[in-house]
Image (tube, rainbow, N blue to C red; front, side):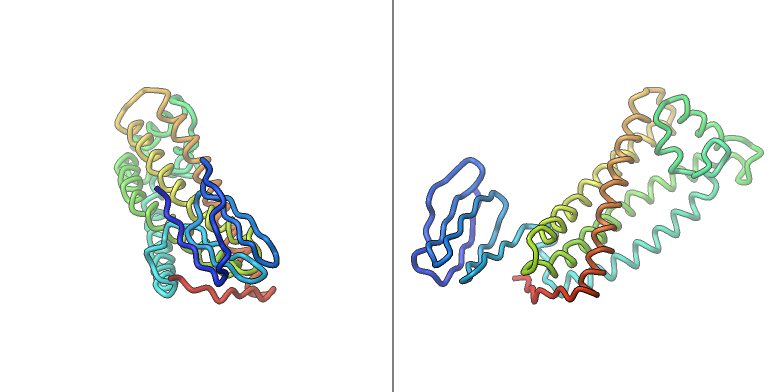
Length: 248
């Protein structure tokens, strides 16, 4: 059952009817407004506009706590990224010029096995310990995926709050991209699982194909989130967007 909290200064605000997609509301004021939604939590009815607050993954944090958490997550993201880069150095071979990323995008069992075999070669700098470093890399990535997705998602939420009273499209886009980072983290975890199966010796064609698709969708969602963060920051910085948003 969905619960909608409605606050309005108007006495003649009423519920018209119910539908499968949500609750249909109308406010008979000087400017009649109609809303249809299944994911809205708060309706703040004002004289000339309706401010809608979409649910996001960090509702449990206050606005100030969100800012502090974002800074901490950004620092952890950089630290873990640097650690993964160091662990990934032994994974760079002729068959995997981009290390673990080449493995993620192998796409088929033949190429995936070719990469794994290149990590076993004794003439490599790390004397055939590539598989060990690959395992460490994928293991640490399970922590990294939680941190980076939370960092980007929380950043999208903070930027979107700047647009809450300005433009509904930019606001809702930020919230959707915040949820998109949750999806990216899930895709990353599935990708890691598939790659681990290949390293452990599975010859099923399904695993490298699954890793390829999960990696592709993951990077698209991450890229969209980062673009939104950067573009939103520039808009707020140079276009003067400021929402006076308060997280209740």
